[in-house]
Length: 214
Image 1 (cartoon, rainbow, N blue to C red):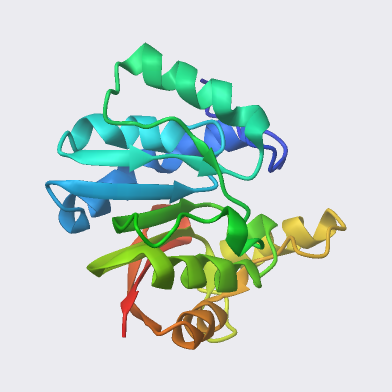
Image 2: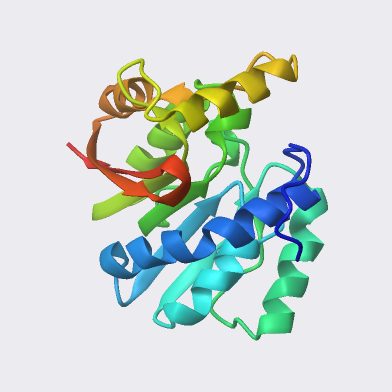
């Protein structure tokens, strides 16, 4: 794949999403190696084309990975990647609408880890309410949510490049396209009995936000 950055396009099957995923998959994996259980269950929200979940799965053979997305159009792509890579620990994808609790997993299925990658810059911050409410429902007692992406910290950009990225997003003219603030993610977590426990800095001015029970 070319290293040249394609135009920003949040569609899960776009060249931009593939470019971004290939760029960030190894730094994310390095953190997941430290925090994931050796055995258990992991749920990815907004799996898109399934690049990340199928890349991570071979590194955690004792973990059963559940992909999910709002858009059922991507399901065949996820399953094709699974087959191509021989990932027998990746389940069939399921539809989850983060604004509709009736689409969420039921409480009889619990997860050690829930993760979501590169969603918030092109989604409303209110989605944090859905993610953390879902987590409060289905996380195991010692489970966690890991959210990866670029964020503002207490109203401030962490680097000039993130300020430039925010301006580019806003220039698209889509209301919800901009960098969100970690304090708003933390507030959504607190409203659901969870807490933002850790902010892990990663390359290209991104973070993993680790959320767990308060």
